[in-house]
Length: 266
Image 1 (cartoon, one colour):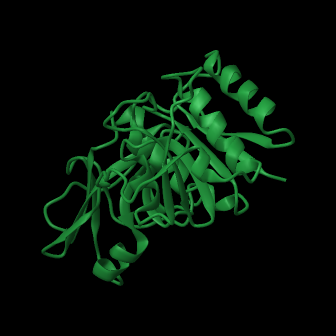
Image 2 (tube, one colour):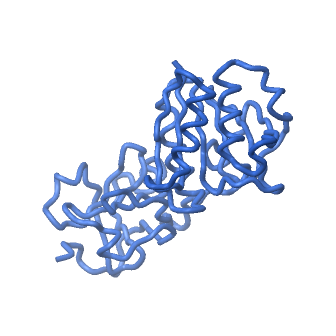
Image 3 (tube, one colour):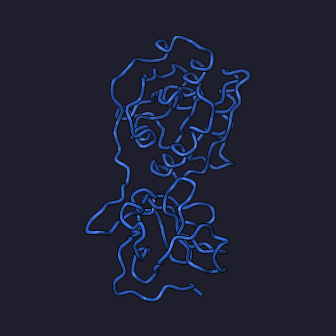
C-alpha cells in the first residue's frame, strides 16, 4: 500500500483539491491519498515546512509527499522530485525542501513539464507521483540535478546567558511555538532561575509547566511540547489573539532582573 500526502495552501472549497486528487486517483490506482494539511497561509513556506518536517516521518517509508505551497512553475524554481530519509517529496524548488530536510537529499530530479498541462503543477505532480507509485524508471520524468535552493530557517541565538528566539508557528488553539529547543534551554538554565518574556517585559513567565491543565484557568504558561520546543499559551484562552502575537515575534529567556510580577492576564 502506497501513501500520497497532500500539504497545500488551498482552502477546502477550492476546486484545485478535486483536480489534483482526481488526477492522482486515475494515475495511482489503489493509492491512499491523505490530506496532511490544507489551508496553509498562502506563500508561507516556513509554515508549510514546519508542518511537513514534523509529520512526514510518521508515515511509512516510501510515502510520497506533495507540497502545493507557492508551487507554480517558474524558471527560477522548477518542479522537483526529491528523495530523502526514505520518502519522496514533490513540489517547487523555492527553498521548501531545504527547510523541510535541513540536510542534503539522496537524489533530486527536475521534472519535465507535461505537454498537456504546461504550467499546471497538478499535472506535473501527478505524473511524478505516478512514476514513483508504479515503480517506473524515474529518468523518464526529468533530469537529475545536484542542488536545491536553500532557505535559512529561523534559529534561536545564545548570548550572555540569555536566549533570544522567535515564534515560528501558531496552532489552532492560539498557542505559540518558538524555535527555542529543550536542549538549548537546559544547557543555559538547568537548575537556574529565569524569566521568559514574550515580545516585551510586560508578559513574563518564570517557570516551565508540565501541561496546560496543571495550571489555573487564564494563567500564562510556558511548556515544552512533543517536539521539544518551547511553547507559550494560556489555559483556556487564545494567547495569540489576547497578546496580538504572530510569527516572527520575539521570545527571550534571561536571568531575573527588573521585571513585573508574573501572574494571570485577567
